[in-house]
Image 1 (cartoon, helix red, strand yellow):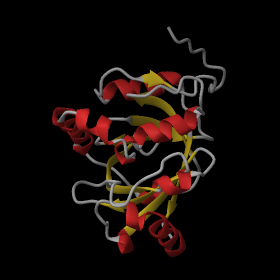
Image 2 (cartoon, rainbow, N blue to C red):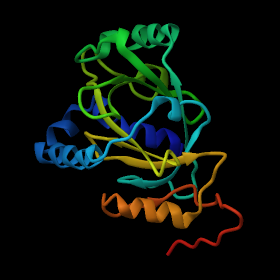
Image 3 (cartoon, rainbow, N blue to C red):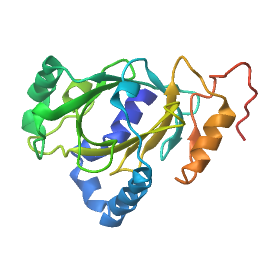
Length: 217
């Protein structure tokens, strides 16, 4: 399976209709990940105007490994046409309905086939509820009223140089920077360490900045 597809399916694991697997996941698992998300609530900083525009490239991850694979995310303001299209695709499959008129961000990943519609949620800046368009992805066959809303936290770091994004259900998190402004690996490692999210993994390993030497042990 293509790694980008695997990543998308992993981050949307709670949205797949695999009831036997879901029954085996203990509530403590979700509680632990929700607690990890609360780390992002400390000194929250999120500005939509700083996030939309040029692609963000993932350079560090937690609870998933990309290694040499590069994954870009594109954020755009949600338009009425996009909201209506995703509503048309997903309305009958969602367990609960979001306030569709309050959609804020449209996120695409990979070759723009994988997408999320984000809605500002209660809580500190950067709190979002997400609707994954699993119908468009084509790799998941949902049943009616079986896809839960996702919960995300996002935070801009170092005056907007880095974007931290975490799935609060599955604990999958990523640290990204603008694809055309590759930071030094030392900056990435230092920023990741300061978050105290546990052991993670460098991603997009072949990308370098000004020939900076970087070796993975």
